Image (tube, rainbow, N blue to C red):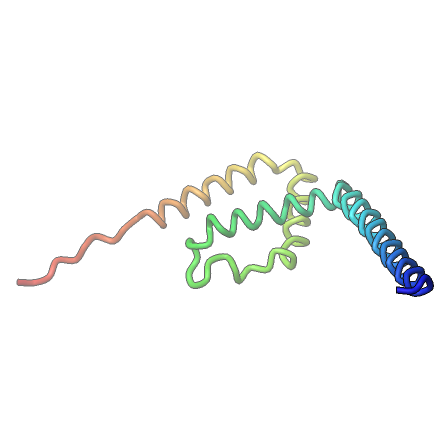
Length: 123
């Protein structure tokens, strides 16, 4: 190789390495921004709520037939739930609401566990 060809190859390799370094630095800055955004309180709250809802859907999915809880759109129902929760908190009805929810839960559990008596076949 001639001196000019070696110099051109060296400069091309140097420019490639410089571009790779710039891309690496951009990726690091982007990752830092993503982590900073994920550590915001509202993002952490939304992540925790979505995780809890996913776990609840996985655990309770077999209770409702067909399809379990997959047909329920939580993002659509959340404003109504927040409005109801706000009303309950404003009127200081937390204890009665918890009692009603507990009674409803016990009733649903009783209905789900109750099995019909086996029918006897005529001989």
